[in-house]
Length: 218
Image 1 (cartoon, rainbow, N blue to C red):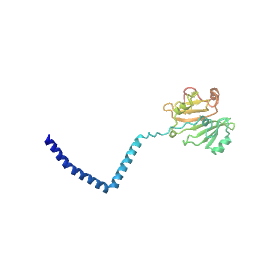
Image 2: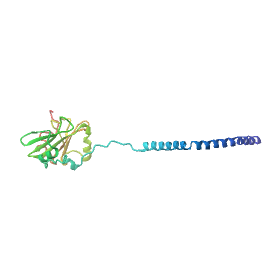
Image 3: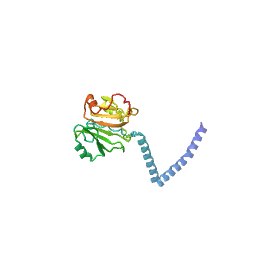
Image 4: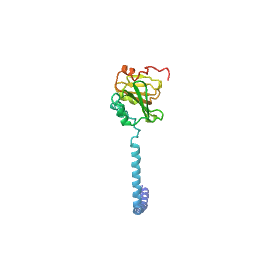
């Protein structure tokens, strides 16, 4: 026991001067490189803050395409089917790309869209706008699901020869619009705007050349 006690005393006696020397060297080092050490500490703290803020921030997602409100669907670009005149249309949009007579009563006026050979079409009867067919480009990324979520199921689905069986028109009678979307992926090709009406009147007027089942030819 006495031997062990003696060894401990010798170790302590040896270590104390060495520890004092280390402490003195550390103080000199701190004094000499004080500002440099502070700079390193600040950079380290900022790096830690930036790291945790990056991974704690919620991931940003692309905003979903917006669906126009019900009031906007009743008037495309402030043109209200059943109310706006041909003269008011041209005052707002200027001279069209072209226009032609569809039949004795109906005329079609065309305005440029994102498609070079696929313009917007405005149907006019007796000087009053009756139907607007807005062309939707692929880049607009509008899907039928957006309309189904906002307005529920359509009143019915109809098929037109020009659109083909691949693009049935989902008709929302009470809201006054129809959406032609691809059967496979729901991508919207056209949106039709008209006065809210009944299925019978729609099929007798706007949809007089449409079918409630697949068309035989396109």
